[in-house]
Image (cartoon, rainbow, N blue to C red; front, top):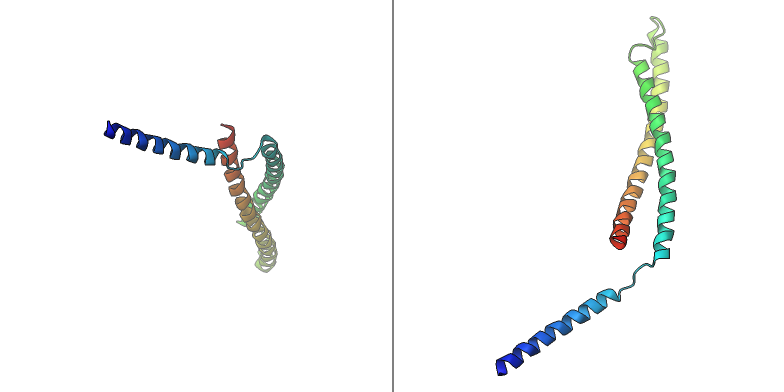
Length: 128
């Protein structure tokens, strides 16, 4: 009988600890539906903006890549290699400036996309 009381006492203590733990976790502050909706609206607008910018940068990149192909043998001025070299250097400087802006934008996009992915994970945990 004494062993049974000890076992019941231990069982009650474990149940108490578990109930306190569950209560503290459920009492943690959580976002309500309106907060999730506001954040979703904000992220959806930002995603739409970044998708438009990405489409624009991709179109520009395709144009620059096509320009580079033209310099690989098709854009010659007869035998005057000096003029061809000057034209190519001007084009190459413009391309390098554009490419620097493109890489800066890609970094900014990658950072935002990581934040968006983290937020989507939290949103999906809350709603599923």
